[in-house]
Length: 171
Ligand SMILES: [Zn+2]
Image 1 (cartoon, helix red, strand yellow):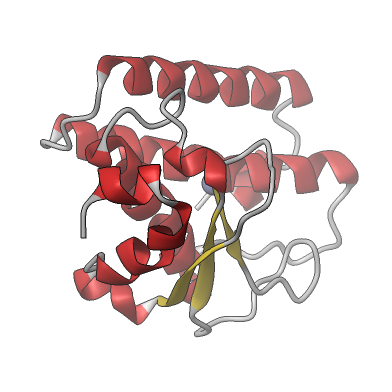
Image 2: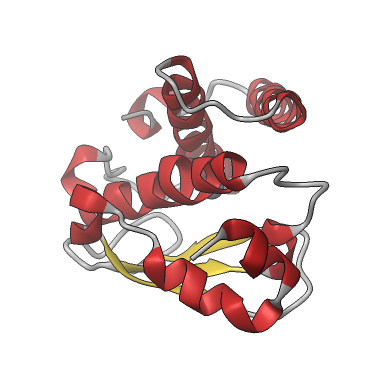
């Protein structure tokens, strides 16, 4: 099943998603679901927060894929698409599954600490994308530019929020 067929024909998108092989990452992903809904983001993960900061471990995640994921302004080609799906969203799914690898705060977090906790989750996923690009995921230049600017924005936000509590939140 071809990415460009799925891009052109909405009804082929679930078939395309079903045809993607995740390899070992299948251990962390229950399903990849196409959802025809307008969003500001292209994919997300249903994760298993017991509270805002605590994950329920050893549960497989569902990855939701939205129309924006097939938008030419966001993904120019299949490699861009796979960078988001595999190197970012599956990375989240793996972290959520392997909760013990994420340092779980032992006290109730403030709003700022919670925000930093979530920013760190995002930053780790972005850094994984960059790592995979450096080792051969050959994404388009536009995609890489967008990725770097989103990463910088998150990093600025994190330093704006301050360093308080960071050491207990960083894996
Ligand atoms: Zn993310």
